[in-house]
Image 1 (cartoon, helix red, strand yellow):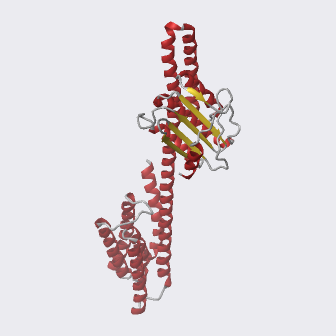
Image 2 (cartoon, helix red, strand yellow):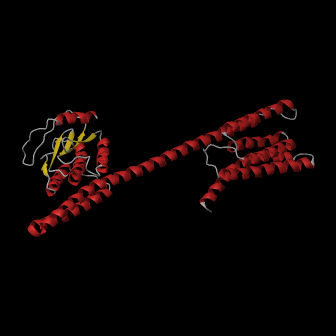
Image 3 (cartoon, one colour):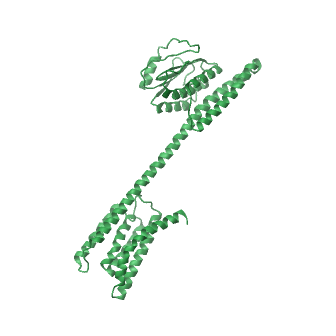
Length: 396
């Protein structure tokens, strides 16, 4: 037995178990004096039960509990047949045949919209009480009315609970889809940052080794050895990214940046210490250093690159051709901007006049000053535009 057939059998069992209440009209029909009344009463009751089960099974094959129900032609026809059998049972058996009205009211819940089904149920209750008031053979019995109300309330509660469960399931599926999408974006961003930087440095060192092969073979061998080390480091970084470990060191990235800029022939002015940077910002600043230096090497054509750090921001500046003439600088900066946004920071990039490019990441902090250290530990003259730029970055 397959899963669908097993589910249909269970649903049919729970729907059919309530038909035990139709024993009363069957007993009343069997006790009738006239043979024709006896036969018609039993047959109409049994036929009602059979049509009820078949219609239930057919209706629930294409309908999920909790979904809005719209009347269909087949459903209206089936309901009409069921109603005619209920009338036949009531006419032949009498008041005990009104037990079928409870099932008729419940059937309206998967035939019509909820409001219409409730109107049908209220109409059946009114009819039951009207017949009790108008015919001496009918006695006032609130049992049928209460049974209809309780059955309708139970069906309504079940449908509403199923609707909530369906909505929750839909939300869970959407959250799972968004989580997968976010993880894919994170992996793509990490791999772009890791491989983009590493492959750029490897390319630069390979070109340098090629130029030194004839004139300085010892230096070329050293560069080739660095290539092997860098490729192993890149492979390890990729493995850590795939495994979900995003550990990255700001001091390590500054050291790699110094080495990469030196290999590319770009004079580097980098800080010697990272103690002033809070620990919760070091990972972000490390990614910014990696992406910013990669862009400088790839696109800028610069002769000098400087990096400044303090407790609330980082600035990467070069004297190259700027963003306007440098192709393909969008993806990495977009990833860095996302990382900055994740920790409440702001990333601002702009071309400098007369030439150059600047990348600034700022976070809410008390300091508007930056300490810039050169490679030999000295402090160069501060640019006059730097404090102004820092304030613009914090207000953008």
